[in-house]
Image (cartoon, rainbow, N blue to C red):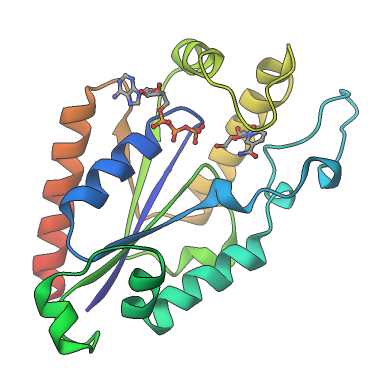
Length: 202
Ligand SMILES: Nc1ncnc2c1ncn2[C@@H]1O[C@H](COP(=O)(O)OP(=O)(O)OP(=O)(O)O)[C@@H](O)[C@H]1O
Ligand SMILES: NC(=O)c1ccc[n+]([C@@H]2O[C@H](CO)[C@@H](O)[C@H]2O)c1
Protein backbone atom coordinates (compact mmCIF):
# COMPACT_ATOMS: atom_id res chain seq x y z
CA UNK A 1 0.00 0.00 0.00
CA UNK A 2 1.19 3.50 -0.82
CA UNK A 3 0.27 6.42 1.41
CA UNK A 4 1.08 10.10 0.88
CA UNK A 5 1.12 12.62 3.73
CA UNK A 6 1.15 16.38 3.18
CA UNK A 7 2.83 18.54 5.84
CA UNK A 8 2.07 22.11 4.87
CA UNK A 9 2.24 25.28 6.85
CA UNK A 10 3.43 28.78 7.32
CA UNK A 11 7.15 29.52 7.16
CA UNK A 12 8.85 28.45 10.38
CA UNK A 13 5.69 26.74 11.57
CA UNK A 14 7.67 23.59 12.37
CA UNK A 15 7.13 21.50 9.21
CA UNK A 16 10.71 20.25 8.95
CA UNK A 17 10.90 19.48 12.67
CA UNK A 18 7.72 17.39 12.50
CA UNK A 19 8.73 15.73 9.23
CA UNK A 20 12.14 14.69 10.53
CA UNK A 21 10.57 13.09 13.57
CA UNK A 22 8.01 11.18 11.45
CA UNK A 23 10.76 10.00 9.10
CA UNK A 24 12.43 8.29 12.04
CA UNK A 25 9.33 6.45 13.22
CA UNK A 26 7.15 5.69 10.17
CA UNK A 27 8.13 2.57 8.22
CA UNK A 28 9.54 2.81 4.69
CA UNK A 29 9.08 6.55 4.72
CA UNK A 30 10.55 8.89 2.09
CA UNK A 31 10.29 12.68 1.84
CA UNK A 32 10.04 15.38 -0.81
CA UNK A 33 10.90 18.90 0.43
CA UNK A 34 9.32 21.68 -1.61
CA UNK A 35 12.19 24.03 -0.68
CA UNK A 36 14.53 21.82 -2.75
CA UNK A 37 12.71 23.07 -5.86
CA UNK A 38 13.35 26.80 -5.52
CA UNK A 39 14.63 28.32 -8.73
CA UNK A 40 17.99 30.12 -8.79
CA UNK A 41 18.01 33.67 -7.36
CA UNK A 42 18.45 35.28 -10.82
CA UNK A 43 15.26 33.53 -11.97
CA UNK A 44 13.19 34.98 -9.11
CA UNK A 45 11.15 38.02 -10.14
CA UNK A 46 11.69 41.34 -8.43
CA UNK A 47 8.37 42.87 -7.36
CA UNK A 48 7.20 46.47 -7.31
CA UNK A 49 8.30 46.52 -3.67
CA UNK A 50 11.90 45.92 -4.83
CA UNK A 51 12.11 42.47 -3.20
CA UNK A 52 12.68 39.15 -4.93
CA UNK A 53 9.34 37.33 -4.84
CA UNK A 54 10.32 34.03 -3.21
CA UNK A 55 6.96 33.26 -1.65
CA UNK A 56 4.96 32.55 -4.81
CA UNK A 57 4.44 29.28 -6.67
CA UNK A 58 6.34 30.52 -9.75
CA UNK A 59 9.51 30.81 -7.63
CA UNK A 60 9.48 27.00 -7.55
CA UNK A 61 10.04 24.44 -10.28
CA UNK A 62 6.78 22.64 -9.56
CA UNK A 63 7.08 20.44 -12.65
CA UNK A 64 10.32 19.00 -11.30
CA UNK A 65 8.68 18.51 -7.91
CA UNK A 66 5.73 16.64 -9.47
CA UNK A 67 8.15 14.45 -11.43
CA UNK A 68 9.96 13.55 -8.21
CA UNK A 69 6.64 12.59 -6.59
CA UNK A 70 5.76 10.53 -9.69
CA UNK A 71 9.13 8.76 -9.37
CA UNK A 72 8.16 7.65 -5.88
CA UNK A 73 4.65 6.63 -6.99
CA UNK A 74 6.04 4.52 -9.83
CA UNK A 75 8.59 2.69 -7.71
CA UNK A 76 8.77 3.53 -4.00
CA UNK A 77 11.33 0.79 -3.34
CA UNK A 78 13.73 2.13 -5.96
CA UNK A 79 13.07 5.69 -4.72
CA UNK A 80 13.87 4.71 -1.13
CA UNK A 81 17.08 2.97 -2.15
CA UNK A 82 18.29 5.85 -4.27
CA UNK A 83 17.56 8.32 -1.46
CA UNK A 84 19.31 6.31 1.24
CA UNK A 85 16.09 5.37 3.07
CA UNK A 86 16.40 2.04 4.80
CA UNK A 87 13.50 -0.32 4.21
CA UNK A 88 11.95 -2.77 6.64
CA UNK A 89 13.11 -6.39 6.25
CA UNK A 90 9.65 -7.27 4.81
CA UNK A 91 9.88 -4.57 2.15
CA UNK A 92 13.46 -5.59 1.30
CA UNK A 93 12.48 -9.23 0.94
CA UNK A 94 9.28 -8.90 -1.03
CA UNK A 95 10.69 -6.49 -3.64
CA UNK A 96 7.06 -5.71 -4.42
CA UNK A 97 5.43 -2.52 -3.24
CA UNK A 98 2.12 -4.41 -3.06
CA UNK A 99 3.29 -5.91 0.21
CA UNK A 100 3.70 -3.73 3.25
CA UNK A 101 3.40 0.02 3.53
CA UNK A 102 5.28 2.68 1.61
CA UNK A 103 4.88 6.23 2.86
CA UNK A 104 5.80 9.53 1.24
CA UNK A 105 5.82 12.85 3.12
CA UNK A 106 5.49 15.96 0.98
CA UNK A 107 6.61 18.95 3.04
CA UNK A 108 6.46 22.63 2.19
CA UNK A 109 4.87 26.05 2.51
CA UNK A 110 2.85 25.96 -0.74
CA UNK A 111 1.98 22.29 -1.11
CA UNK A 112 -1.79 22.92 -1.16
CA UNK A 113 -1.59 25.81 -3.64
CA UNK A 114 -0.74 23.80 -6.73
CA UNK A 115 -3.70 21.99 -8.30
CA UNK A 116 -1.85 18.93 -9.72
CA UNK A 117 -0.65 18.03 -6.22
CA UNK A 118 -3.99 18.30 -4.42
CA UNK A 119 -5.25 14.83 -5.36
CA UNK A 120 -1.98 13.13 -4.44
CA UNK A 121 -2.43 13.36 -0.66
CA UNK A 122 -4.09 10.67 1.43
CA UNK A 123 -3.76 12.84 4.52
CA UNK A 124 -3.25 16.61 4.74
CA UNK A 125 -1.82 18.53 7.70
CA UNK A 126 -1.24 22.25 8.03
CA UNK A 127 0.73 23.99 10.80
CA UNK A 128 0.12 27.62 11.63
CA UNK A 129 1.59 30.06 14.15
CA UNK A 130 0.67 33.70 14.82
CA UNK A 131 2.41 36.66 13.16
CA UNK A 132 4.62 37.63 16.13
CA UNK A 133 5.99 34.14 16.67
CA UNK A 134 6.48 33.60 12.94
CA UNK A 135 8.46 36.83 12.63
CA UNK A 136 10.53 35.95 15.69
CA UNK A 137 11.38 32.42 14.50
CA UNK A 138 12.10 33.62 10.96
CA UNK A 139 14.55 36.17 12.37
CA UNK A 140 16.62 33.33 13.81
CA UNK A 141 16.99 31.62 10.42
CA UNK A 142 19.34 32.13 7.50
CA UNK A 143 18.19 30.80 4.14
CA UNK A 144 20.48 30.12 1.16
CA UNK A 145 19.61 33.70 0.24
CA UNK A 146 19.33 35.65 3.52
CA UNK A 147 16.19 37.78 4.04
CA UNK A 148 16.83 41.45 3.29
CA UNK A 149 15.45 43.80 5.99
CA UNK A 150 11.70 44.33 5.55
CA UNK A 151 11.06 41.20 3.45
CA UNK A 152 8.91 39.57 6.11
CA UNK A 153 6.38 42.39 6.42
CA UNK A 154 6.39 43.40 2.75
CA UNK A 155 6.31 39.99 1.13
CA UNK A 156 6.47 36.85 3.29
CA UNK A 157 3.52 37.48 5.62
CA UNK A 158 1.17 39.10 3.05
CA UNK A 159 1.81 36.19 0.65
CA UNK A 160 1.14 33.72 3.45
CA UNK A 161 -2.24 35.35 4.14
CA UNK A 162 -3.13 35.29 0.43
CA UNK A 163 -2.11 31.65 -0.09
CA UNK A 164 -3.82 30.58 3.08
CA UNK A 165 -7.11 32.01 1.77
CA UNK A 166 -6.67 30.34 -1.66
CA UNK A 167 -5.79 27.06 -0.01
CA UNK A 168 -8.83 27.01 2.26
CA UNK A 169 -10.93 27.29 -0.93
CA UNK A 170 -8.95 24.59 -2.82
CA UNK A 171 -8.75 21.78 -0.34
CA UNK A 172 -11.30 20.84 2.30
CA UNK A 173 -9.52 17.82 3.72
CA UNK A 174 -6.88 19.62 5.74
CA UNK A 175 -6.26 18.97 9.43
CA UNK A 176 -5.02 22.13 11.11
CA UNK A 177 -2.30 21.94 13.75
CA UNK A 178 -1.40 24.57 16.32
CA UNK A 179 2.31 25.23 15.83
CA UNK A 180 2.45 26.86 19.27
CA UNK A 181 1.99 23.47 20.94
CA UNK A 182 5.14 21.61 21.95
CA UNK A 183 7.09 19.67 19.32
CA UNK A 184 6.26 16.52 21.26
CA UNK A 185 2.50 17.20 21.37
CA UNK A 186 2.35 18.02 17.66
CA UNK A 187 4.26 14.88 16.76
CA UNK A 188 2.13 12.66 19.02
CA UNK A 189 -1.15 14.02 17.61
CA UNK A 190 -0.02 13.58 14.00
CA UNK A 191 1.46 10.13 14.57
CA UNK A 192 -1.78 8.93 16.13
CA UNK A 193 -3.89 10.32 13.26
CA UNK A 194 -1.63 8.67 10.67
CA UNK A 195 -1.76 5.34 12.45
CA UNK A 196 -5.57 5.46 12.45
CA UNK A 197 -5.66 6.39 8.76
CA UNK A 198 -3.28 3.58 7.86
CA UNK A 199 -5.42 1.07 9.76
CA UNK A 200 -8.55 2.31 7.96
CA UNK A 201 -6.80 2.00 4.60
CA UNK A 202 -5.54 -1.58 5.08
N1 LIG B 1 6.53 23.28 18.33
C1 LIG B 1 7.54 24.14 18.32
N2 LIG B 1 7.70 25.00 19.35
C2 LIG B 1 8.72 25.92 19.36
N3 LIG B 1 9.62 26.03 18.36
C3 LIG B 1 9.51 25.20 17.31
C4 LIG B 1 8.47 24.22 17.23
N4 LIG B 1 8.61 23.54 16.06
C5 LIG B 1 9.69 24.08 15.44
N5 LIG B 1 10.23 25.07 16.19
C6 LIG B 1 11.42 25.89 15.85
O1 LIG B 1 11.01 26.82 14.86
C7 LIG B 1 12.04 26.97 13.87
C8 LIG B 1 11.48 26.56 12.51
O2 LIG B 1 11.21 25.17 12.52
P1 LIG B 1 11.21 24.31 11.18
O3 LIG B 1 12.51 24.48 10.45
O4 LIG B 1 10.81 22.93 11.54
O5 LIG B 1 10.05 25.08 10.39
P2 LIG B 1 9.61 25.00 8.86
O6 LIG B 1 8.14 25.14 8.85
O7 LIG B 1 10.19 23.78 8.22
O8 LIG B 1 10.29 26.32 8.27
P3 LIG B 1 10.61 26.78 6.74
O9 LIG B 1 9.93 25.83 5.82
O10 LIG B 1 10.12 28.16 6.65
O11 LIG B 1 12.10 26.71 6.60
C9 LIG B 1 13.21 26.10 14.33
O12 LIG B 1 14.08 26.91 15.06
C10 LIG B 1 12.55 25.06 15.25
O13 LIG B 1 13.40 24.57 16.24
N1 LIG C 1 15.59 27.66 0.18
C1 LIG C 1 15.80 28.75 -0.54
O1 LIG C 1 16.48 28.72 -1.54
C2 LIG C 1 15.16 30.04 -0.11
C3 LIG C 1 15.66 31.26 -0.57
C4 LIG C 1 15.02 32.40 -0.18
C5 LIG C 1 13.92 32.35 0.64
N2 LIG C 1 13.46 31.17 1.07
C6 LIG C 1 12.25 31.12 1.94
O2 LIG C 1 11.87 29.80 2.22
C7 LIG C 1 10.55 29.87 2.72
C8 LIG C 1 9.85 28.55 2.51
O3 LIG C 1 10.45 27.56 3.30
C9 LIG C 1 9.87 31.01 1.99
O4 LIG C 1 9.23 31.83 2.92
C10 LIG C 1 11.03 31.74 1.29
O5 LIG C 1 11.00 33.14 1.50
C11 LIG C 1 14.06 30.04 0.72
